[in-house]
Image (cartoon, rainbow, N blue to C red):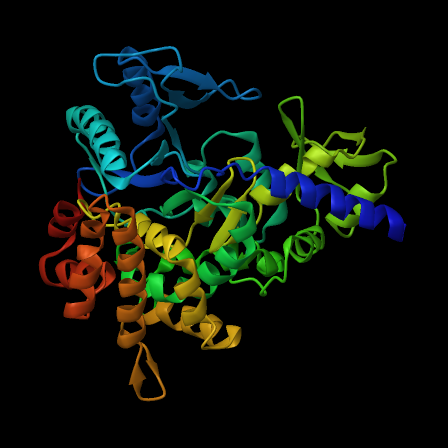
Length: 465
């Protein structure tokens, strides 16, 4: 058994390491984004499914190809075909889909070599979508959570994988008649980015960005208002709610331990309790196994269960690790499938500031050695505690009697230096973050001020694209 485990870890490590494809050090590394945007009616309620479904048909009319879910036959996403060029777009791999909640759409932009190209691509998509939603009296919010609606099963996008989340969740917050606590994910909206990374830098980059995630949250918290009121004591609800969705899987979230190397990282992932596997387009949960390691090491068939409760046998495959990587919800995680490192901790940002968080992540990776030395000045426990406090207070966090503002200033300066090396004028995307630091005001602070002084209408106007 021990030899099988060593063989499995070695095989996964090799597969994992070889999947990072950024090789050309003279070519700018690619940057892609996953931009989640809450869609609301003019009064701030979550847009109904009919409007989102018709959005896909509108996109089809504008040259997109519709992709359907294999089980529900519902539309899953709209993509620009590789062999297609339309009046609005050149050939890309860009796609528009939804997140767990159908009223939160997701713009998935294929990697570009610089942020200016990414900005142009994003602007084209936003113009196209705004035209549709304006016609249907809906707004697109640069905000991290649905501001009024209760999270519930009724808001969940009809995809088999999402419905399976409820099998692993609880009812500590959401009553059974409305779903499970996993339905909290139906209302949240993040601003995520992917950056191409060399295989030799994967672990150090992940360790560094995870440790520094609290400083990013301090600058970018933007989800303090939901259920129609200010949630007292939490400014980044989008990040805070994750721990309630799967309370017995907290080791898969937030800031993980510091990893020594790829073997150490793979061993940690293999210790996770089994989640899902996929076979021929269908999902199953693994039964009677304590960990992914136990499931994968044994090559004999084991029992798995479909969403409707059918129990069948499945033979473990090395490809099942793809599902392990996808249920690794760290603030920063590695995505071997794309050869990228993914930053995940930031709420969606206010309109016109969408790419500020991407610029920060990119700059830190381009100046990784300096960023690594910076985070190593403090213990991992220090950074974990700072993250918890910034989720609650954003910029208004003190260590003893000392403000974290100087640390954030240093973080921004490290990122700016990294962007300057690229010579694309990308450092201008950091300006909103410097402005927030100067004012000691995160987007969450501004949202609270507008909401409490002028009401929901002014808040929606301020946060709309």
